[in-house]
Image (cartoon, one colour):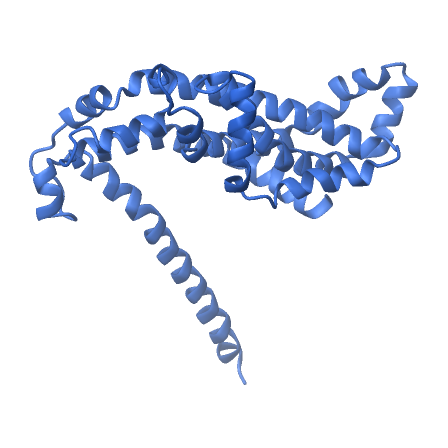
Length: 286
């Protein structure tokens, strides 16, 4: 067998891999491209020529979606709820992960398994007790109650990731900080926390994605009387699709989806390198 024959399988395998990657790219990107140009189509054109480019772009769809779905108030509520939920989840998850990875105390392993077990509980099973708990605390139909629910549901993942990440950091750095008189809080704040930046960003991104697009819990806890002023973007988007009773303005609906999706794409594009680093380090060394 000559050299050319030896290289044939390698070249064929490389071509097959690139072909699969290209096909995956097309399957992943085309729906987003289709969504973008469909958002500027009139409703009739969406059904008559669903895959064709718009003949006369209807940019008014975005203004109609903004007004009909009350997306202005929804945007404010989503930003407020998401920022507070992400901040609390990252901070509390980092503190818990630091304690479980660096402190030796009875029941530490049980506490970690308790948090991990939270990843296995379907949200649907917790809705009823959460509803009665929030009602007893008079936090139904409020941003505060929704933030508490999001933080509680996001902490298991945050603790799992941050515990593995802090364990991957050299123990000598923690010990040196303590010997220098930094104390546990100083060692955590000025030494360990900056080194855990990729893990923190990973938790923040996943929490942001989960909270920003979350609909089920928001619908369950923000659907009572007087809750219209605190509803988030997904609820506004759902209201947009049924704003005209039996007639849906599909052009405006697609425009609303684009407006809700855009922040997610921006965050992912800006932080994808940190996300990749965080997931890789946590998987290899956690």
